[in-house]
Length: 392
Ligand SMILES: *Cc1c(COP(=O)(O)O)cnc(C)c1O
Image (tube, rainbow, N blue to C red; front, side):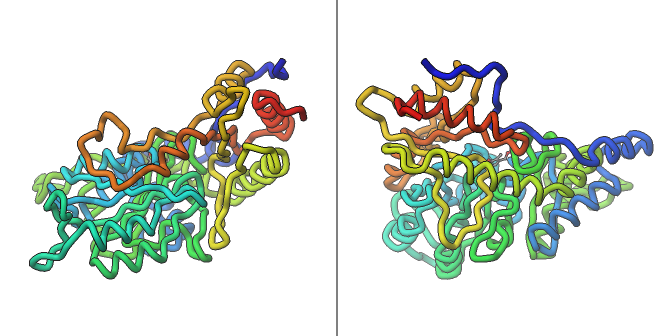
């Protein structure tokens, strides 16, 4: 019998305990509720400061931030972009919105991030340079950019990515949606490539309900991002538009919430660390369970604490344990179907993505809300061990 838990325990619920009410009321009182306002400017400045970039451009979600970043980085129709296959689907969809094509790169076994050895192998052996362009030998298309996705609060090993990008003259667009506050060799994730994107969806480290941000050090790219996300207005009085733009801006109300959330970023990160530590203590040393790894060069935020579960003799695997937890009111989730297996992107090229499939069969993300109490977390640990057939 699995220990019973009365209330439900969510995977990642928003934490709203700061100045959100005060700042949003400011918007309502002043009438500045839409896509222009002091909170939008302030939120952009605060995020740029937090990530350590010169510029930040707010967007209405992380997916459109990625779409815009790809356009700004010069990705043209029919170009190819090298992207992690083990990711939430948004960055891959964004590549298709730009009429470009993804080429999927596997995850590595140690930290579950983009496999930079396989990336290097594809660039060396799967591509050739013709007329100053780097062409994919199998598709004949031009490779334009690398889009590493830092997953679960842990950074990709970026030095090899950056040196390959220099060698092959590719743009680097970081998807840092799950990694606000994470660091790679002391440097903030989101400040490592040419341009990066963040998400403030309800389940992320901080939330604006829905929202995103493009961050970069390049003044011309930041200006282009702002232009494209605000309908590409050349003359706002005469409504002259110099390009096909988008209505991708964040509203002042959402930005007000973001400012309040950012004030509590270090408290959110501290809670995630405490939660990770407690899972680590409670689940280490259990045969067949692998606790969440963290690289020596990483300062991970443990956005979603995730473990690997080896299928055991009694037939317990990650999906069965997920169902057991669910019946006890505890939400858990496997990692995403690797995108090279997704019906939506079935016709795209993947280079030997077997590790992503191996991880997908085993991974389970556990409740990691900033507000998770130690009692609730102990219930999760107890239920999980019982479901796996361990006496605790
Ligand atoms: C959440 C997320 C996004 C963007 O999501 P939005 O809901 O559009 O803000 C992009 N990439 C990854 C990896 C994500 O987890």
